[in-house]
Image (tube, rainbow, N blue to C red; front, side, top):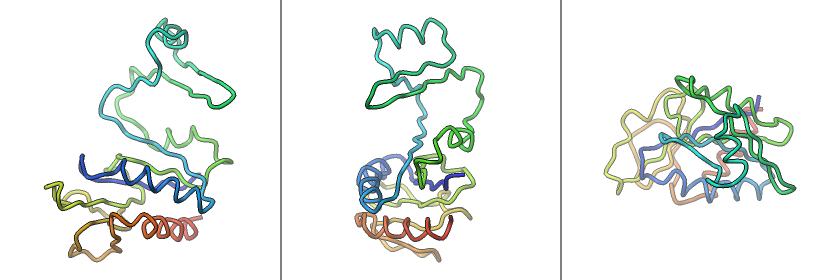
Length: 168
């Protein structure tokens, strides 16, 4: 199975901002990256009015939209009670990835990097559990795990590369 690494933080801390910088950094270092992003809202990646949208809305349980540049599979899950992260990760093609970064899913029992930004006004309590392997922060914290500068993508990316080398 592809290693999973969570990026967890309170809303507004900068998870997406960090990932938008971290993914190209890892790619530049020949680490093939997949991503699972958790959303608390109903997700619709299709465009209303397009054929694929209309066919999916007609009742297809799964709809694949494909072109020569990309494809996307949408699966309707009206009876699903909770998301199963490991099931979602198993849908990825293992032969094309080295790691799956997971944004959100903060309560999952996977390796995680917790983010803390002092200006967010939100504390780190409840984010640091036995699965947090590091903290990326803009203020040193009194914890006994590795800490990195939240604004230093290279430092965080190099740590992930080392961790990945140890986890495979």
